Amino acid sequence: MQENIAKYTTDGNVVFLSKEKDINKKLSDIIGEKFKKYREKWDKVNNFELVTDFPMFLHLDLFQVCNYQCPHCNISDPDLLKKAYKGSISEKMDFDKYKRIVDEGSEHNCPSIEPQGVNEPLLVKNFEEYCQYAHKKGFIDIMINSNASALTEKRAKKLLDSGLTRFRFSLDAFSPETYKKVRVGSLPLDKVVKQIEKFLELKEKGNYKLPVTGVSMCVLKQNQHEVDDFQNFWIDKVDMVTFQSFQPPNAKKDYSNFYPDETEKKPKQKKKIKSFRCPQPFQRVVIRNDLITACCNTFSTQLTLGNLKDGIYNAWNGKLANELRYIHQNGMWELNPTCKICVETTAN
Image (tube, rainbow, N blue to C red; front, side):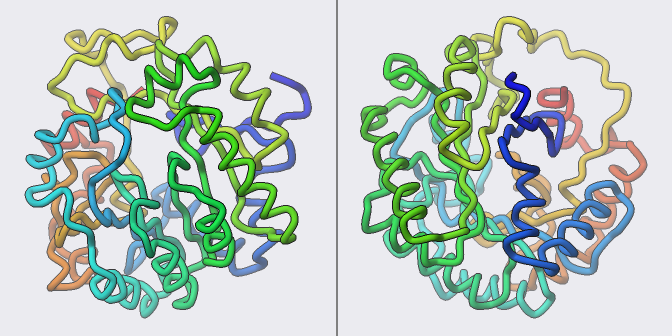
């Protein structure tokens, strides 16, 4: 790695590279004291030092559809999605329901939101309005990931004016040949790159400080030889380059062919995990259909905390949420069968 590139992590599975500074420090410089205070509070929550009376992060699954069928993603397994999500995977969350969720978050000064889950967010034609509404209601940190296939110039202009804080493009490859293998059903890579570059050009010409931008690669056996080329191509174009460890979307399927050679895992030989505490039940709720769940994993509906009709606040402060936080604060993840499967399958 070049000496002038900073390397930092937010957890054991993701590495961020930046030529300037930690992205949160950059956002603090742009947005100001309120962002800095929000991240200081987030760090306390993330380190199990603080339990808030409302989640700090609303993670909303507007629907579970993508125009790509990447083999290492749970989108490519619709039967899994239908079972895990306990309902329709194609029905979009309507704007009125979304507004009710955002309104409750705003009432409790929730600072961050991601109006996207297991999907391609730009397939929602009025997606910019979702971002704008959260921004208007006082959310400080609004973030999304996209494959950039629907990032036309018209959409790019709307997104730049939407209040979006972080915009990351999921690419997973440097060469067209590898891109076709890992991003099945995709547009040609050169077209996607041109659309991203056009967005960056419009941002620069319009003197927009936000959103901060990034590209990401989930490192697989199929693309690991392109890590350096990927980094070198993008590091001067975007604010951050992200490399994510592969996490199998389905604990019951064999994904051994996707693990990079140097870190290959044997799914049938589960390693002993000495200690682990999951911060997600302290940070967020994930809302899928009408269910309020505890984490971003595909099977998180097995960790349902409540229903939207009863409100997020009640679910967050309910018995199930408190029990889940207790076992993770004390490193007793094995007591929950769903957490046990997740940790043994995905934890590094």
